[in-house]
Length: 402
Ligand code: GLV
Ligand code: MN
Ligand code: MN
Ligand code: MN
Image 1 (cartoon, rainbow, N blue to C red):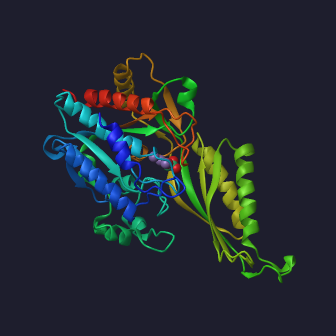
Image 2 (image 1 turned 90 degrees about the vertical axis):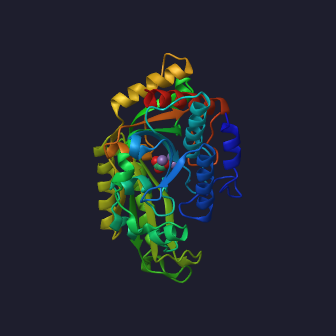
Image 3 (image 1 turned 180 degrees about the vertical axis):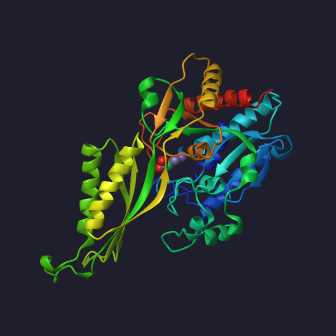
């Protein structure tokens, strides 16, 4: 199996000096990753197509003539200073599983596809799972066209710079029609599998979650000569919102809430800020909990003069029960075990966006010994990764078999 070779080839791409990854959509790093994916597809004799959002699909067989097909894969982009596994593990495992099936002389009864979804993390343009949201229509072409990065570069311009045509961004029925089922393998981003003592599990549900932009406005002024009583300092309102989010999540609601990104203008040590923009990520097992928290927080912030806007929302997602059962059974058989843990997760995935659009979808998780993710410390043992490949291979054999 060439898991090792693929992993070693991919590992240096987009790694920053501190050890974490900065693999952002439609950058030069991303172009190298997309080229890597196309090269791997070519080595396996798969034919590459690119959909209206720029997602890459590598097909074994012809999904138009003989489809719809069974698809697996994940994403190659990262959060700022992300880990090596979130996304790439699913892509490398998918390619390796296809290679294993080819090697054993398997003849798929329906086409098999491997996908590399564009911009899953939304690290650059703010909307998570942008590639899958665009093709399912969850992100409209109008909203997609209006997205800009921190430097003011529009999504369309960034895509054009990467050699893609952004003029047809939008729901892509042709791409969707080719999928009979989608199975995404992903590193676990928590500790359920460690606690369970299992290398692989099946994710059955994703918590409702979303992102909101808070804009606190003030007046820039001198840090030394402006009396405290005369200040309009938006940093104070921002700080109050951070504390309120924490208190609401710990007390009133059963939720988690995070301000992980903040931009301060003018960002000078000796200047009172004129503006603070901050992004809230809020999630909960129940929609009423997360929406209650955000409503309370937005009310308090608005009372202090802040502007609050929703940037993305993903409702509670249940994966296809029949497909999940088949996946669990096939994975267990492949691993020679009688037990396959079923898990829920607070992390978002393209599989969830496809599921919400009515595509039968399921997920396999691979154990993460510390549960740490979205950090360079993210990790999975090599034996567990290989168990994931074995499980995925068995799943594809079952789903694409006669
Ligand atoms: C994506 O990884 C997310 O859930 O934030
Ligand atoms: Mn992630
Ligand atoms: Mn991911
Ligand atoms: Mn994710």
